[in-house]
Length: 201
Image 1: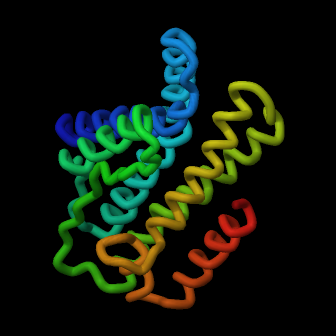
Image 2: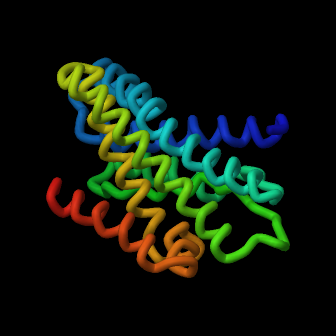
């Protein structure tokens, strides 16, 4: 990983963590000091829960693509990062509670990549989020309360959401490439994630 790619990953990680922290603390007004304390807590939670999901999702794409002999490099999307911060700030100061988070993606260059290989590269990210969610679930069983309980609980939800969202069969999301490779594998991953969220909410 070169210096530019590493820097852009870090910038994206911190930016989306700030945006998610704003969403989490948007209903925690009640004086300037309490707000700062709650926002700081939300930011730390987001760095761990959202940051690990985002970083490892992208690195999974990169690792599998490299295994297939392709060139893969993360590039942040400046407009997407600005929109994430903007919608996060709207959540803090208005009733508008929606977050647009599209920090960037791993761009893959490989003229000999097959449809199957492209599907496997694409599904690697959502599968990684599911694994991370399971790790957070295991940690949550040991620390279900307090600060760590909130962190691990949010880690479960956000990583399963990232997996489900990215598996939507809409281009350029991962799901569109997975379904082009094998619709059965796509369904096997996507529909249990949808069921989880319908059950949870």
